[in-house]
Structure formats: structure tokens, C-alpha cells
Amino acid sequence: MAANAVDISALQAYCEQHAPELIALAVKNNELFAQMNVIGGVTDKYIMTSLEFEKIFKPYAKAWDPGAGAKLIPRTGYVELGQVELEEEPQAYRKTYLGKILKGTDPNQHPFERDFLEGISIRVSNDINDDLAFYGDKTLKQNVDPAISKSVKAINDGFFTIIDKEVAAGNISVAKKNLILTGDINSSNAVAKLKAFYRKACEYNTALRRQTIKLYISNDILDAYNDNYQAVNGSLPYNTEFEKVFLEGSGKRCELAPLSGMGTSKRLMMGPAMNFNILVDQQSDQEKVTIFNPGNPKVIGYYLAAAIGFEFTTLSALWTNEAAVDDDGSASGI
Image (tube, rainbow, N blue to C red; front, side):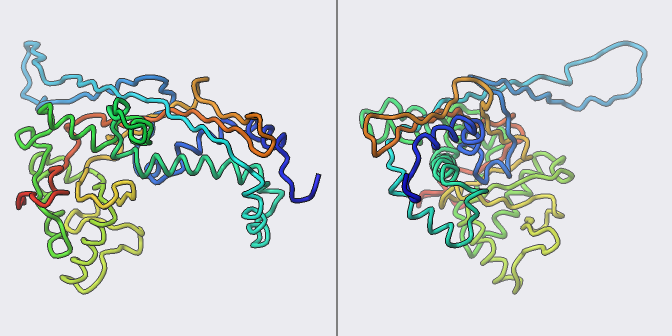
């Protein structure tokens, strides 16, 4: 075989040997896993139960009177299977790989088979990050247009879709104190708007003042915050010790966590990182990756199946703003 030829059997062997790593890379190689909670071993659904208390400390008395100070609040998260079906010509990618070798990649540590197959898994992970995590809507599977029903967004509900459904059900609202109307957020008001958002949530739940939480925002909102902060204070808000941006006035307890998957949205999500869950399988045989011969000697067949889902542990530790903030008609808000 020529030195620059691709050995299909080598691809098959690498895929079989490293299947768990390739599946894991497909769902984990994105910024969400560094910023949120991950629950593994979910093959269908997972019930997350939070124990929520009212005020329970009271004066001593001999009589036993437990009252009703605590309640269990269950929420169910679901994973859905997504799949990849490809016929690819590995030889066409060979020159790209050889270019990496010329730039210093060690072929012994990073063989072609690894580079080619990991590249597909990374593409899957990017799809999850960019299209599914926030904007996924599994009702799109019913759309008559195959371009929509077979799109990444149709696999499962993303965080924004889950929020929208809870708003429609009345579980997230101003009255419930987990919806805070902000109005438009831009480079002339972002610092004041985000501070007001945080302070209103702390007014609703005073325990936030002593907790470490994250305020998930788009990079556009972070840019607006930085521009506004610099215009007002003459410098950027970065803390060189922690290499993070903490919301001004939060005592370094509220970290601004920009996520590219939020796109250009002006929507906000805030709470403890443990409340924002990514559900994966990574254990059962419903997930697989395989290389096969589709009948054309020039190409390989590639199939991958992986499960993914998103859910909040409790709505009482989530604060968000109105979806209309991404529309021109958003109210003035805080």
C-alpha cells in the first residue's frame, strides 16, 4: 500500500478499540461541560428531586409538632438519541492530515485514524453546543419539512425551549419570582441591567448573597457589559487573579459565564451551576459508533448514536428574563 494511502481496516480497528472515547467526545467536547452539571448513565429519563424548606427553626416545646416545613419537588429530565449517518472518502482528507504532520503533529501519538474519527466526533459536539443545547425543540420532529424534522434542533429540548414551556405553563413568572423583566440590554446599560437582575433575584432569595452562582449569557451580552463597564470605569472588568469576570457588586459570587451556544441572544439564565444539568448515557449499548463498507471501495460508512438531554434540577434556583428581550418590542424592564 502507498505511503499516503488510507487503510480502511485500520480505521475500523481504531473505531472498535476507541468507541467509548469517540462517543464521549461527541457529547462532551464543548464548553457546556465545563460550566454546568453533568449526569451520566441516563438511558431514558432521570428524576431529579430537590428538598425545599420553609422556615423550620422555632422555639423549643415539649409537644411534637413537625409541621409542613419541607417538601420534595421532583423534575424529570429525558435523553433522546441522536445519530450520524455518513459516507466519507478518507483519502480526500489525507492531505489535510499530512499538513498537520508537517506542522509538527506526531503521527505516532496522533495517527490518521484518530485524527479522522475524532474530527467527526468534534463536529457532533459542536452541533450540540451551537444548535441543540439552547435552541433544541423535539416537536420539530413532526415538521413536514425534512430539513427541519431531521435537523440537530429536533433531537431534544434545549434550555430556552424548556424555559418557554415552563413560562407557558405558569411555572416561571414574575409572580413566581423566577422571571425578572429586563427589557433591552445593550452597551449603554448592560452593567446596570445585569446588576439590577442579580439584585432582584437576591431580593427574592436572600441566600443568593452568600452563594457562588453563574449568570449564563451570550458573548454579545458579555461584549456589551465590557464596553459599558469600560465606558463608565475606564478599564475592563477582568480579575487577573481568577481570570474570570464577576458581576460588579456581587462580591465575586456571581460569575459571568458566556456561552457561544446562546448565539446572539439577550436572554439570561442564573443560578448555581448544579441546577443546570446535561444528561448523557455513556454506559448502555444504545450508544454505538461503527465503520462499515457501504459497497463503494472509495468510501467508508460511518454510524454513531449518542444520547443527550438538558434539564433544570429545580425552577426555584433558576432566574431568567423574558424571551421577548430578543424582539424589538421588549418592554423597558428593570
